[in-house]
Length: 190
Image (cartoon, one colour):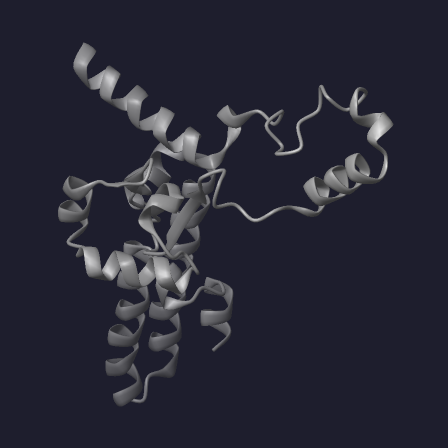
């Protein structure tokens, strides 16, 4: 139990391929020594696998390229309200399964989604369109201030009620799309 605690707290859905292989290997390797009443051999074998797992995770933290090699990237499945059917086929994910994930996230219509991704752990990530986003507390305060103080309308005309002054290019989804475009350009240049 101590060795598994050292290996880290991850649920099965968060495990990478190496983590899963090592955890299964630990179970397989320690069965025989325990059956032969050789507890020390079982502990040495399990410790070796845990150390290997910790080394792999440390290397993933150090080098982004190694992490991308070990984990798959998040893939865009909805772009501007349109399904990316080729990506769904690559993921072996049906439209019904994607719709189920969207419903579980509280999304009513695919058209309300600006960008949706399937992350490396299988979870759905999404960004709603401006019309579908809920109002934030900051936006509500700005609207109340404009309503209660109409004279301040001129001073706040430069600031946006909808939060449009935020840099839209720095969202996680735009970063993912830009990275995919950059990779495509690099492949084309080679």
